[in-house]
Amino acid sequence: MMTRAYSLLSGLSRQGLAANRALRKTGVAALGVTGLILAGCADQSGPTGAGGALSPSGQVASHKVGVLLPLSGTNAALGHELLAGAQLALGGEGLPADLQMDVHDTAAIGGAASATSAALQAGDGILLGPLTSGDTAAAAPAAQAAGVPVLAFTSDIGQGRPGVWVMGITPEEQVQQLVAQAKREGRQHFAALLPDNALGHAMGNGLVSACRDQGLAAPKIAFHSGTADSISQTLRQLSDYDARVAAVKQAMPTTPVPDATTTSGNPAEVASLTQPPPPLPSGLAAALGQNGAQPAQADGTTPAPAPQITLGSPPFDALVLADIGLGLKNVLDALAQTQVNMPDVRIMGPGLWASFASKLGAIKGAWYAAPDPTSRQVFVNHFMARNHHMPKPLADMSYDAAMVALTVARSGVPGYPADALTRTGGFAGVDGTFTLLPDGRVRRALGVFEVIGNGSDARMISTPAQARSAVSG
Image 1 (cartoon, rainbow, N blue to C red):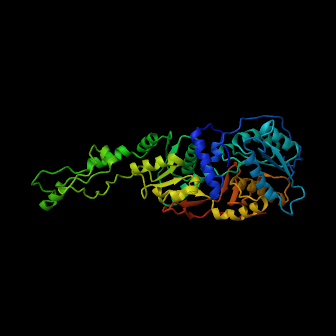
Image 2 (image 1 turned 30 degrees about the horizontal axis):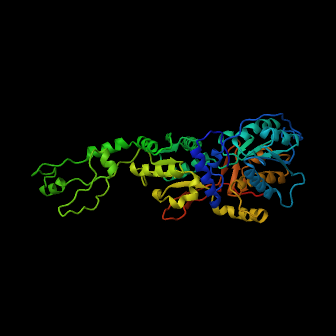
Image 3 (image 1 turned 45 degrees about the horizontal axis):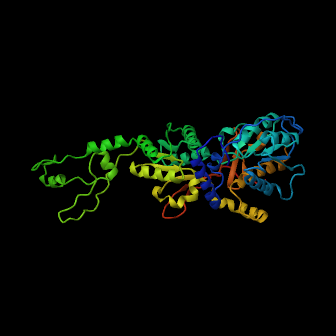
């Protein structure tokens, strides 16, 4: 995953970079936040042209693979890691004779537009990259005009279109998996409490699409500014907290007069009703206009806390979150204060939670969608044998993209036609099967994981859907 063309707050950037460091340890690949945090490069333009021969359909017939990556400048380390992933896929024996790599630096003078122009002039039949959303926007028009497909390493679903595929695991795709699983569980009413940033809006857009696609009612979505007060107030409104408190207050019994009887006519019941009502949690007591302190007994001791009074359910039974770091802590506090919890509400969040799922005991039972981490081990072993270091998660994407090119080239068709790229069998990737859809989206095999708390890793409750057989070429 890489970038989305958004200007973000520096605080979000710090959260994303910390999450990326954690993801390197867990092997969770391309799960939406790093790609949404790095700023998209400015649009660039330059002369374009195609040097490859065209098939009768207008598709470039060459099997030459153009690779567009930042090999200098601030993103050079990422670029070289992605290049290593592609080289691993295309560095074996038995390659088609006309399959060659043609590498171009998108950070050189002229940027992504000039790199794309050079690749097209060289006759490349497919482009792997660029890295960022901004570079993809700059590269795609010339490639599309030349009939050359692009497998871009961005998670910005907005860059996807016929002939341009978004290879990153997008937040929208994660939400699709979560909503499908929640619907199978019987959840019907969805809501989202999200940060007002790129990741939050991507998760929100994904929820709207997923509910529409799966025949569910439109979700309630609310964005917060990131402060504890904003999170608390936004969740109170989203969960109808004040109305739920008012309902409890209205239902609370009044203290009967001495010698009264109950409606059942049994005086024995009066004693229990004339006792002071059980003390409330401090927040709820304040909302009800009462003192939540525990009264002392005659002997000076404080009685054991009474059971917490339970509010009614909020107007949704599934809630999507997207916060990490301090923002997530504040969200968890707000969930407890407003009594939005299981089993009434299924909490769901981004795949980034995989890197610290063992610390999410406060929302035991929460879900997130991510690849099966065991699927990656074979790739890790091969990468380490060749490059002598653990691969960064981004290398998964370039390996997958290169395997698409290799698989299609081995099939014997001229160039990389759309029907070969979008074949129903899909392709075997580092993290499982994935399929390129005609509209530029990529469907990946993601599992749904459930937080179990107690310092343990989450457990996979829904295995990655292998609806189509994996094809490795």
